[in-house]
Amino acid sequence: MGKSKIVGALPRLPLEVLRYVLLIAEHGSTLAAAQTVNLTSSSLSRKIAQLEHELGIALFERHSRGMRPTDAGKLVVDAARQMLSRMDRLASDIDDIGTSGRGLIRLYTSQALVEHIVMPRVLRMAADYPNVKIDLQVAVGRQAERALLMDGADFAVIITVPTHPDIEIVAERSNQVVAIVHSAHPFATRGRISAEELVMSPFAALPPTYNSRVAFNSLLPDALKDVQPQMTASSTAALKAYAKSGLGASVVPELTVAGDASSEDLVVVALEGADRIDTRMCLCRRRSHIMGNAAQRLLDDYSQFFTDAGKGHLH
Image (cartoon, rainbow, N blue to C red; front, side, top):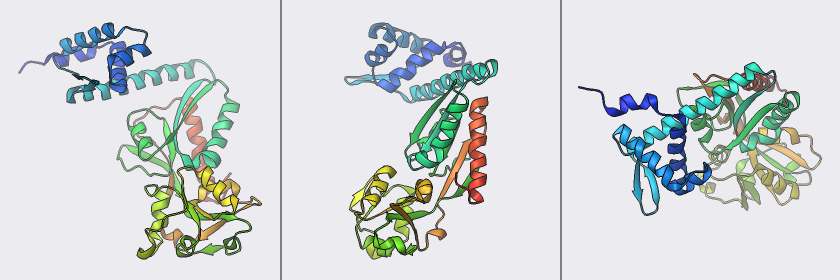
């Protein structure tokens, strides 16, 4: 059996054309994609048509609302995304090696960890290496895991623990769910309360799909699992504001409020049984990912933090 046209054509594809394929897939039309690269829609359409002719296969389905990748197109789009990401990384790594203190760091994190866990080390890196560029993305659900697998991130500091075998967990630590209340709240002097007690009074919590909310709901008896909080928010800053207002208790991951534990108006209260639930924070990366010097420095900083946190030092 002879080789298909695509086998011979793929190695010769210019990166520019791969970028066009990716842009069309992301924007859904040649018109929107062309506007981002200073081309006319007709010119971009001709380039894609020529590429499809060279490959002998349709990459996009044309319809009244624009264009969407065919099954083969999806494969090419995924490959284009990975190749362009690797070339961007190569350029950054060469710059990192050739010029002291330069480089690019791409980091994904969970929103709950931004304030007290992630930002102190990002700011220290920015201060120590002002020429290093930092791309910090807040992940929702499995976004961080997908970014790692697609070489869209150097590493991640997240609550949603990845399960893919290609992702290495560099370090991890417990991250129990806790309640936070104003210092004048009746729970403030308790030290420990039950989840059942908490939901019998006004409270706020993360959305039902978040790991910490799932962990909290598992502490409730079946008859109370459907009790709805007064406020549901994906922002831990909003949950802290709710607790500080005195309106009620907020249910959050403990590391969200690690830096607020000594606050005069905010008290952290343990939840009975939370120590038996496997909720964690992890530092992870893709096993085969080649990391630049700047990213490796920051990864090492977080790794040391995890080691210190395991000894009870959170700062």
